[in-house]
Length: 184
Image 1 (cartoon, helix red, strand yellow):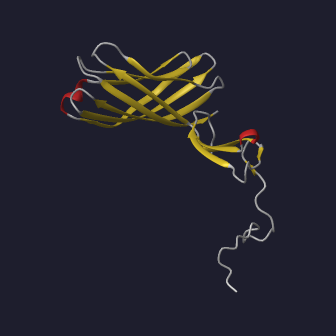
Image 2 (spheres, rainbow, N blue to C red; image 1 turned 180 degrees about the horizontal axis):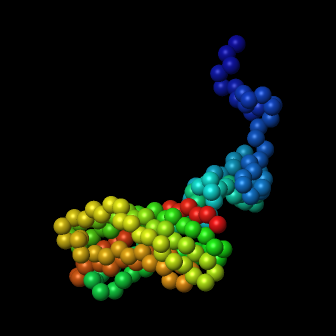
Image 3 (cartoon, one colour; image 1 turned 90 degrees about the horizontal axis):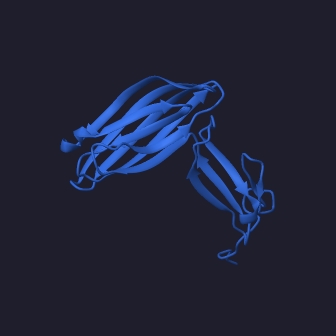
């Protein structure tokens, strides 16, 4: 007799029963709804030394899996005068040292041109504020007339801020992804 089409809900792992719940880093047991648990990916700027965290919502049968230690932001520039904030990120009030890898891309919608930048920054933060120890440009890649744009990393108070300044008469869309590690 053929076994085709027979479904064994006990699975092949031996325990005799299907998975009942999934429990993430936060300790929340997430049960299935209609035999399904939703796994949802994402990102967060929350510090986690492993670079990944999970959190559950039992009421929606959802387990979130997030890449951590990531700061993202967007901006649009239309002139060569007005800096636009891509992101401002609050640093720890506990005395800490950060190493940030900042990656920024710009797309000049007006002229169909591109630019990309990578830099590394070391910042010391404490209750009184932050001090930028170093900012080292890594890779600068700009097409022709994109050379005049400005990408600037700064600290103000206890925040790190990324701003961009574009070109006169040009619409440029910006996106940044920064990853960081820190020690207290």
